[in-house]
Amino acid sequence: MSTKQKMLNAYIDMVEERIGAGFEGSLLTFMFKNLNGSEAARKVQMEREVQRIYSVLLTRLVKRPSSMHMDGMPLFLGCVDWPVHKKVKKAIDGIMNNDGMHFGGICLLPPKTRTAMNLEDVVDGARKPIMRTGMLTNIHVKPIRDTPRKAAGYVLKSFDRLRIGSDEILILPRAHSEMGTL
Image (cartoon, rainbow, N blue to C red):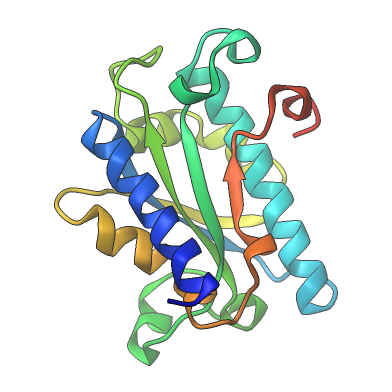
């Protein structure tokens, strides 16, 4: 088994283990307006915006995140992605922007959060601060119901297809010392 396949399986196992431990999983798709720069520059802009949005959501989900143990915090795993099926391009707002590049991820909420709402409701309630930079056209949230393994594989398909490297997979939270820089 290749190193890439071992890493992919480890990420998928991590998602399955957290959901098995009672975490609530959701698929997120971040659609962006046309961003300036090269593909690499647009990837950086997308990643920074997703980090900012994670920080916005974190304060609504967890009380005092800087003093909380990392294992009990919401986990985000994601990367840039490109559309595969041509019919999807017409169905999703913003898919034609940035040559189809967008950001996909999985957010895993711990069993106990600050709110009883699911992530979809939290995102809807925080839409104004999420959208404030004007970079996004939409953020779509869909609960993971039955197939966490399939969902994790779907989110990481750009890595699986060697379109991105392992260093381009975004995992949040980072170490507490780095959280202030998000």
